[in-house]
Image 1: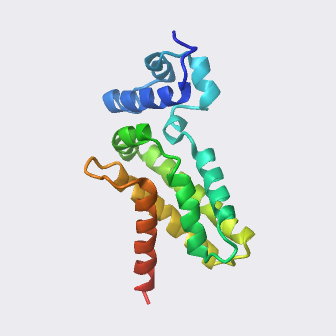
Image 2: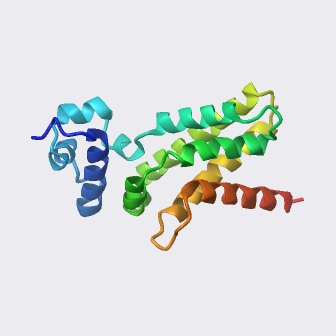
Image 3: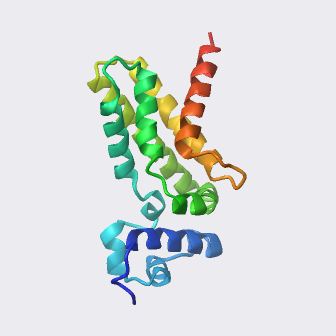
Length: 190
């Protein structure tokens, strides 16, 4: 096995997505994922606690990027401007490889209730991270929570558009546009 090759984490993610697509989530084992990636089970478990989490790789990094992006926003920024700056930081970190396997990832997640539940938890965790960052800036609730949830929804929607083959726009642009559309839609509720 080629344990010395770089990008073990990304290789494990791609192997898992491929296998889940080929034989289903329930029928795929950690050993199969590791073998497909050219790694060992031990290496798999150095990166992920279980096979479900391989599909949600980077959640901690995503939260960190959102928090840092929010903290970097100007002091005069409105709550949604803070969220937009945080989304720029997160969306700018996504790679062409993530875009390439994005459609397959979304199909796998969409086909299994446990994975859909985990995806919802990830979205909630990102919204909580944004709300905390806004609270740290002195934004009270419910404003902080609403802005944070709009940000999490904007990111999810933008990601879904970004991974479509016909899309030519960068993810940060899509995230900002989607956030603006959601802000306008929420204003129309009154």
